[in-house]
Image (cartoon, rainbow, N blue to C red; front, side, top):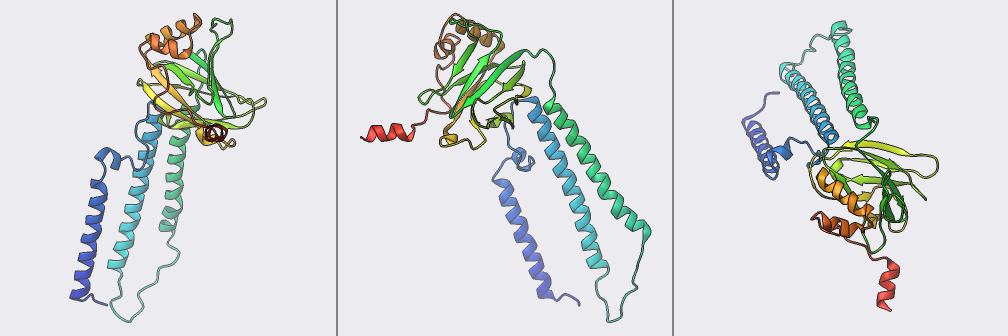
Length: 291
């Protein structure tokens, strides 16, 4: 069937409308955001950059395969459209084409699998003797951060412990390899800082999870529990404060002299309390305030 003039015009108008909608969608975000293909921006670790590159590469490969397949479909639609009532020649058992259809997807999957394993191994890589070790010990519904190998004014390792009216601040240096040793004292939690573009569950019992990373920029970043752990799970926040190595050393020295975390932060010119998130009011606190 030959398309009439009105049908052709409708197709052209439909194509223009689709192009305008696509242009409007892309104009609502920056070029960098558009070509991130939905990947979150603002990663602050080398691992987040490698995961971003893997995501973009995989998406571009998928689009390339899609465009190729769409091109074949449209080419077949145009090239082999019906031209009469006679049945066109039928082709069966085309061995070369069937081999291509079988081998090509396997090759695509193999390449994606290889690069995924490479990035995954890099994210999970542990090196001996990291620059900084911090123990992450969550409990319903707050966080404790301990710096092993240090000694505070009470003779115990330097630590920061959160409470219902105090958001714990985890202070760490930039450009150093940091190891997080995670162990829960009650139920399963999950250590998550969105800017790390990575999270890892924290288990009770004999299970201890570890991961290592390097912070590339200073700043304050909200951390959360990403595993449903009970009543106040959604309010179980902390703040990651990334500072220069010099300020981190001064912070630890102040803590070892017996200073509190807010006082030690003030001593290095940082805000004493978390400012990217705030303490939560428990229902009990709200009930007491209303009575």
